[in-house]
Image (cartoon, rainbow, N blue to C red):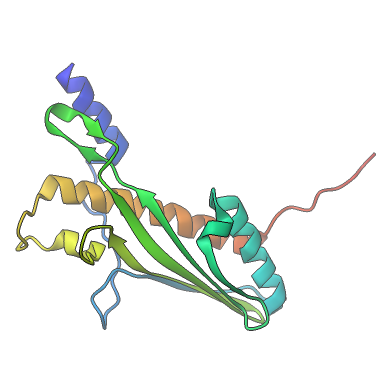
Length: 179
């Protein structure tokens, strides 16, 4: 039974892949995802609308996420979070290892858009940037636990950014009424 728990934990968290890394801003050293995409033939307004639709599809509570919606200046700012799980002793998976919160900023100009995901922190009593999970010198460092958190975080943001980039390229397919 113990082996089954460990196997499930490995599959859930991809523990066989320890190469996951959270990108950081070169100047601040803090965790950050940043991308600029070219979408020729689309106005700032069209790209804003497309991103707004993506937010409504991706997040369970899109109105709770969006803090700034400024179509005129081509900017959406949101705050969101996701839940972490922890592998406990004997392979038990604890789904309550806390939350990772972040800010996402989307900006639009004719023919291009940009996203910046920053302020990525593990919700703790003090500000704990997720890039600290790689600091082996910190008090209470637990390599297995923090590696799992890194993998969960990179998986979440890989899925988020891939979803956003694909949606911004293609948008929503038009529905045809062939009656």
